[in-house]
Length: 94
Image (cartoon, rainbow, N blue to C red; front, side, top):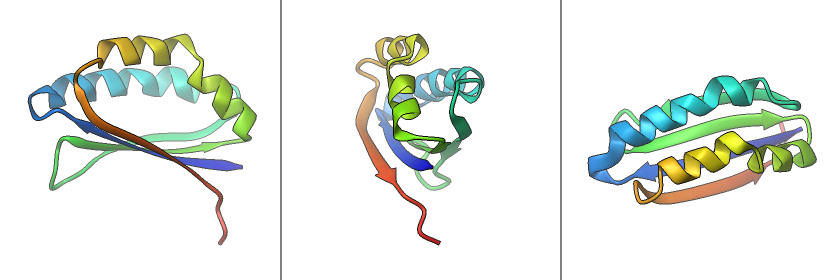
């Protein structure tokens, strides 16, 4: 199993746009092959900071997700609205 932590920081004036576009990803991604968990979080003290906590059956299935049309649509919709984006591939150890 592969865990992904994705941190997305919206431009301060684009928080609502980024949130709405991220929320669109949830139902379609949860239906993808290999998706075990796909949960979006918003920082209580910094509303411009979003985090996806994801679990995938394998790295290969997660890589297929990255090529999905809905992610390309998200990238286009959020172009210029995201200040910082960081992905971490993690393995559960306990």
